[in-house]
Image (cartoon, rainbow, N blue to C red; front, top):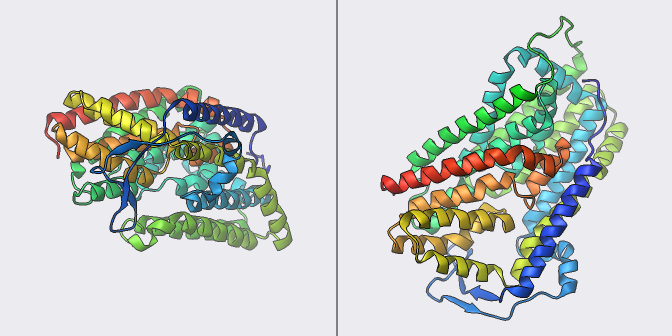
Amino acid sequence: MENKKGLNISAKSFILAIVIIFLLMLVTYILTLVIPGGEYARLLDENGNAVIDTESGFRYVEGGLPFWKWVLSPILVLGADGSAALIAVIIFLLVIGGVFNALTEFGLMHYMLERLVDRYSSVRYRLMAVLILFFMAMGSLVGSFEEIVPLVPIVVPLALALGWDAQTGVAMSMLAVGCGFAAGVANPFTIGVAQTLAGLPMFSGIWLRLLSFACIYAVLFGFVYLHARKTEGVQVSKPDQTKPERSGKMESGLRLFGIIICIGIALVLSSGFIPAIRDFTMIIVAVMFLAAGISSLLVAGMSGKALSKSFLKGVIAVSPSVLMILMASSIKYTMVEGQILDTLLHSAVTAAGSMSKAGLILFVYLICLVMNFFIPSGSAKAFLLIPLIVPLAQIFGVSAQLCIVAFAFGDGFSNVFYPTNPALLISLGLADVSYGKWAAYSWKFQGLNLLLTSCILLLGLAVGYA
């Protein structure tokens, strides 16, 4: 734990991610050349959100995308609908990079990790269980996802210090919050929006989602625990007698950092009950981490000049991730501009008409999984898909409530697997874990979880969940 290097993103990880995303961009462009353009009519709901008008139906239109537009799509996406959220994510990333580089270079992060290891090394697997539960609850109860990215650079070094590997740290934080987000016990961005669009009481039918949360938590903890036991390097449960030296200034800085972060977490949690701040949680987290980092470092003894220099170095170090985010976001832009997104939806809806009830609910799950590759935003996907899949399912005797659970499952879990999700790319970059290594680590859990959640959907169908 002597490493006090500043925050940096591995060149190898960056290049691999860029290559993967570029290939996906290329495949998407080719699709615009072979799939005919089409569109559903849309109307505005009472909140001003565009939703599909199922009565007006679907029509084919001229599609395609000029090659120059595809080449410039990572830049043009900044002017597309929803670009404000994309810009917020980029600013969010740069703030995180600057703060954590300063924390690391000054040694406050190192000091904090020493204290945590000294206190929890003998009960590290209990700590693992609590952290996984905490992150899952953040995702499931208040819809946090991008907001926990600043915690990844804390959890990953902690995992390494406790004798595990970096993938274990990412799993304890990012994978856990993704699982909680998908279980959606009271997730306002998926369950809340989808149930409102379907005309159901918000957060009704909670029992199946609570059951899902418990089952997914058990599987996730078992997966992470077994991997950690297999790969742990040293038995830190019996540390030597040398205690980390206490520093009054470091203690004060660490205490202030913890207080401000706890206030930020409390504000994020309160967003589940205060709709007025729900759309600003990412901004709140960025401001709180900026305030926590700057104030704690100044109290700990870092000069303002050194802090500014270190913060700027951190911003520069993580700036390559901005290119990854823009490239990943351009995939949806290409599909929308090429007019093939609605065509694919129409083809899926048409194919679903001849299926059994069991086949239909699993097909709804599949549609949401596929669409999540192109549209990571849960609420944006709800406005796109719910007006289509809920009426279709009800025609064939499948409840809207079960469709919404399938939608939440399809939206959430793949967020922590698809390379088109900006929060995953940021987290892997900050953790110095390549996408290839992450995919090789997590695909077994994703497969097991796919089987589990499919069984939960079939259980809901069998018991008449509504």
